[in-house]
Length: 324
Ligand SMILES: Nc1ncnc2c1ncn2[C@@H]1O[C@H](COP(=O)(O)OP(=O)(O)O)[C@@H](O)[C@H]1O
Ligand SMILES: [Mg+2]
Image (cartoon, rainbow, N blue to C red; front, top):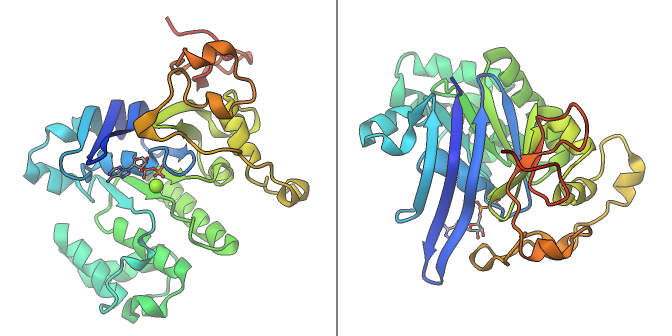
């Protein structure tokens, strides 16, 4: 059974200015021990998906489709069940949470509290074990958040998320606020946790190049939809969707100094989700758009352009054939 399955997930925020369809028809599966990367520019709906998994969206937000955690529908759970599942089945390291630690409590205490919330036992010892597991010496338990660097705080947040031994960890831009060296360390930590503990990881980032090293599978989002998915190396190196191509080219390639000097930017802005154009939402920025693209909004379909790579899918008129 899959650890996480999203079936035709749609999330619409209700605002005074009208409805904002932030996630549209997303299907995504994460198997046990698997790492899946979710990429796309800011505003494409990544954090909305993270919040939707644990029903942490603002009240009144419309959600349709299914979110299955270990086969159980999260949106059919009673409040007690939902509380039991949050942080024990799936935990989230929230985007931009580096300053969310309580400034007046020692980090060790904060982890102990998270442990007590569910399991309770040996909280103090386990808090220290968790800190060590994320690469921080036991003595750090006595420190206050302001005494830690950004990278160390991110490790504490990961330790907090692991406090209840979740099977699934959703890490929302866990490296974005960190400098490159520390980014690499946090990535290595996540890889190690995934490998040694069989943790399933949904890794969210706007930086496609980070994902290719960390994730087996990749899903690229644009304007609330997955527009391309497949094995991460293949998707990154030979993207099928013009958006993925542009996104991949907009980040310097690791080990390629030339691209670092001159990353090709992704021109234009993503569309406003509350005012999507008809046809393909990427058409305005697309360098291979044809007249059909103004009317045709192609669904995700098998990319059979390259022989033997049928596990790849993309939502573009130029790609493959529709799945029957
Ligand atoms: N609470 C909210 N109310 C209304 N709109 C929101 C809210 N949160 C996010 N949005 C909108 O939903 C879209 C997706 O946002 P988000 O999921 O945060 O994207 P990402 O994480 O990919 O940057 C954006 O257009 C954003 O402005
Ligand atoms: Mg986000």
